[in-house]
Length: 344
Image (cartoon, rainbow, N blue to C red; front, side, top):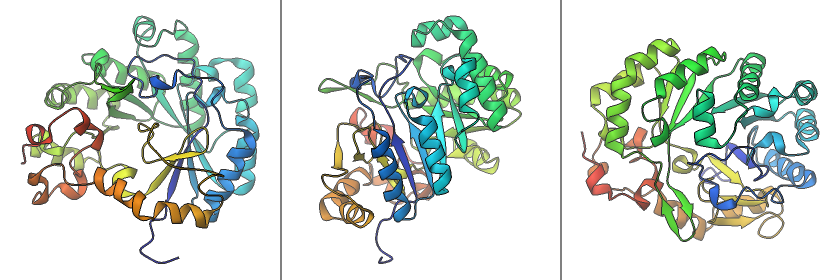
């Protein structure tokens, strides 16, 4: 392998589309949460073998809701035998079921990321349609205690003024930290939907307003996964977040460091771009060498170059660009970068 080859260091595996939640801001609404769309166990195991062959040592398991995938236990056993780490991203509701939890914890993933949707029975029902708040809370507490893990939340219009409440709820459930992501555009029909996105300047204003309370609620164990350009924030605030290790920027797409598999074996640049595929397992590639060829061909590189290009002329001379990359490329589907990117 030449040193200039793009070789993924991590992988995301979408196991299924079925989900027991109906989050109003979900990027995957357009999939209709089809329970028939899922990887077979053989497919998932073959993909793991392929990933091992190119040096990937860690896989994140996504859905849908991964705990609804019928072969999760068998898959965990397989990955454990192969020595590859798996991190499950889950809403944790099934972990509240005693029978399922007893089976799962005997064959767990290596780690777990709990995705919070609410902080109360009322907000859970309003935002996801789920009425089993007690079951969800039990599952979250079991997951955070078993894995000693943190939790994450997608900040959106529905929780614009309740982020501190969510942080307190996360800590009450035993989360060791809270990762705050910011809502992205979603695809609906032939258009892009931003109904639940907050404008970048509102996000910055709200987070700065709530920052001290968030730090108190989490004892400082909070991280902001920035999607907006850093110049939307006061530079002193960005420096403070960086100094406290509370800032996460630049995703795998912008670094070309990961690969995302859909539940039919297709690969995507981003799990939000599930309708825009680079190729499909057993059709466009069948082994690690063919996968690397696909990832490094001229067409694939041109797609990445387009998404990773400077969104604004201001970015070219910005000292923060290496950490910011101009924000999430999906933002520019709905915003004019020249109006959003102000420069420090």
